[in-house]
Amino acid sequence: MTGKAKPKKHTAKEIASKIDAATTNRGGGKAGLLDRSGVEKGGHAKLECPHCKITAPDLKSMQIHHDARHPKIPFEEAKLVNLHATTSVPESSKPRPGVRGSLKK
Image (cartoon, rainbow, N blue to C red; front, side):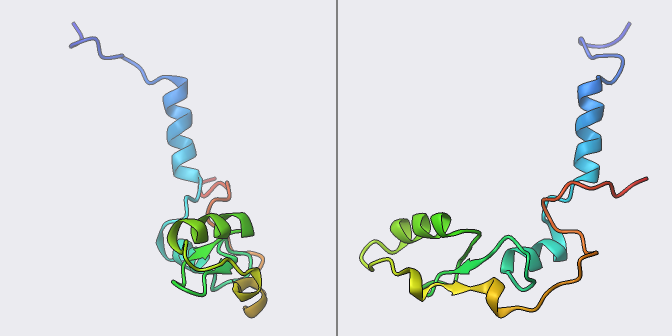
């Protein structure tokens, strides 16, 4: 007898989700930190708030942040810091977080 209605075999969905979790870069670790901080051009963090130095990937996200965190200060697009304009071009061979790619062959 098997115990308490546990499945005897792994399902295809479970195996596929494990493979996906193992081979997709989710943005953690040192590579993810560099990507989130906007140090390397091509990272997800493009704009930086001039008031609290938080980063956002696009103008719409930065406007949402500004309306939520700094409601008394008027939003000025010209004051935002573009992190991609101030950094050098990265190596194209580096994997970026959030990009699907097989780490195991």
